[in-house]
Length: 316
Image 1 (cartoon, rainbow, N blue to C red):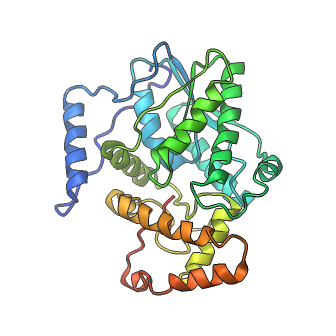
Image 2: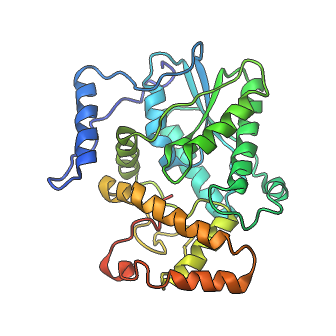
Image 3: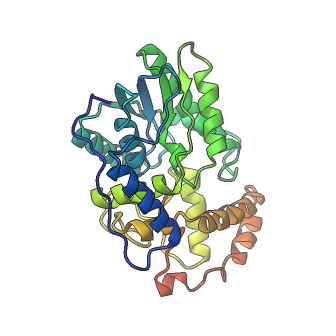
């Protein structure tokens, strides 16, 4: 890509002696690629030169932007911010402004779309108590991908992609399905599907996030995620999520240690969270059943708030 000469593939962070095996292996593979002159691992669809990258937040954007901007096959990458799901407005503005800053530093065009929250709530009616990764999340991805695809079609982009696909908190197949459905609406627009959750991408994502000291959000973004996360925390005697400020409800406010941050997105942590989230969702809007379900969690990981382990609580 030639439109942003200021970006380069950096050396990354030095790993400590006790770094986990996955991180050491990923770091060695990245180091070898740099020594060989570095060639981006991303493979855009055939004929794609201009990409509209839907971004959910700066932390999820870092490694994906780096890979795309380092690709010799691309001429232009534009970041598209359309996330009417994020609640409250204060949290939305924090995530948006940080994303804008990151793009400005790299001389990448940033498209600021409307905060279309009323339409988002209208579309989510009847799904207020769906579990994470359920039908509500599909509708949320659909809404955002549809808007990205329309903008891409109207502004001559060849493909769309989304940073939602980088997070292990998201079901990549669910995200990609929404992307494909949206792109199929418009002739000449493709959806770029790739494994953005590899160990190398995950390590780079957290190295970049630590280097930039990105704001560490404590929940997915929507009001229902905020509600369910705080209910879970209350049941476990954990402080509520804090919006903005220099202090998080639990753990660090900003990314600072790639390995600690990556541990919060380990597959074990993610699997445990969703197993419990699904149990809670089964109770629907029955307040008594929800309260009873939350009691079950009271003794799970009960020492985490005292022993300093915060995995899985504040890194989305």
